[in-house]
Length: 273
Image (cartoon, rainbow, N blue to C red; front, side):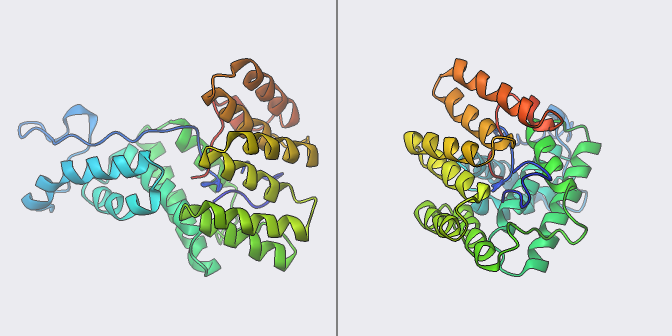
């Protein structure tokens, strides 16, 4: 998921969204003599020995999927891990990120809103437990700006809204070609739609189509040079290519465009959650 009103708060899909490159570390098995060793929370007292024994393998698999960007697949594993380790702040943030991405695939607006509100609550718990990661901060900035219903809108035009929502659902499932088709339809309906151009750029970026990604980031910037998001996403892509000089210039443009956006100070742009 990315944001609805790009002037209200920063965009991922969006997550999706949300955050700077973030790797989830697999949770090590706790030592018998010290269940909360290595800075992790001990399983709940009610957790069975069998569950505890499977946690390291489950944690390793969840971390692998999360770090590959397969957050919908990581979601059920993280649900189980957070139930067993409710004070593990890294797991809480990872589960929140997965819920934000999953919310984009839920067709019912109220149900998807509830998922985002749950993600927000998980982030608040993680923050209270000391998690100040860039991912957590970027997700919090996005989710704290949501209405109390948790629902979002991309456009006041019903057809554009439908196309962008369909694109976000496809993006969250990693069906990138279908996502681009829907975003392109939104742009046909509204040729000045910054969000559609940005989402096309970010989708090409995620696919590794960097030349096309650059073209579309530049198109989004031309559509609205006073929004920082495309500068920041573009800078992140260039930094990954090692083109640091241009990336720094784009981050300066991002800060000038929206000087009070917290995300402008991040080391790299948040992607979708």
